[in-house]
Image (cartoon, rainbow, N blue to C red; front, side):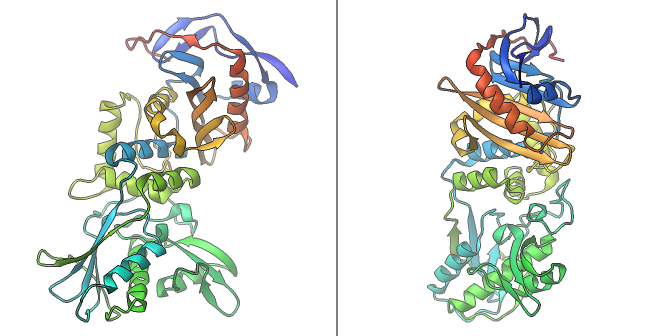
Length: 415
């Protein structure tokens, strides 16, 4: 069923980008079952258009829970800070206690293949027989909590740590008689074996549950690779500082550039990558959640001009995160050089966000050779595919519309 609905100016008083104005309605054809449903929502906001050309605005200056669209902000800040071709590094030292010390720097993308490469390169160095492996995780402070993270085994609830393997997850296959690693490239560690007691038979990917477990899993994988690569090292794992007198043995440069890490974060909505970036971007001599919250609060106010945005975590897990559709679109205007990193659904390229009772979508509609930014926040229960269908319908309807030209006036409130 199709029904004529108001689109670019659905309301007698239209509030857009800081401007209060009166405008006559513009008509376009939009599927009634989706658009009508949107018009009944109490806790929703939608803005289509950027700068001074707007196709539709509704509650665009009302703070909303953004869910995983928060990751667009993390992507933007990381790419602007370090550049697309940035490669994170991890340093390995020979200590005065004759251990191999790994100094954690929070690299979000240390997979098994990266650790095996590091072990092979270390094996080519002329080293004495080593007394064990030391983990220096002092770069991450005591408070690296994530508001909204729960204690489930799901990968999206993975904890953070200065040294982490495989996004602080393990992949296991459990039968009635045995447990094996479900990844050919990853050895079955004692830590993984202990975690297998929490799962039923079958194949599972689970998170390591705690920062301490993440560090232990990293150490056990690294130790296994070092020994299999021919490095003479005792099976002993320690925690502590590498020390000022330690000798740099090897610096591992991650083979995945930042743009690849960001693309994966956006495509798979990887909470671990997002929150590791959150910590790294806010770090001084130390990385911590309070430091990162302060850093981002200042960043969005000073660089993006946000007045209502509140940043609590980097992945969008927290329901305390808040920002407006106007603020999201202002970010998307700057994110255009990196729009190729977003997932595309036909003419829509965007990042989804999902929490219980929350559906969000933010990105671009490809329209007349341009990328038109949009932000959709729905903070109440709707059908599973509601957000995609609504924006795709708008992408079709925009072919019949011209944007409303708006003279921005920051002195006026838009709500």
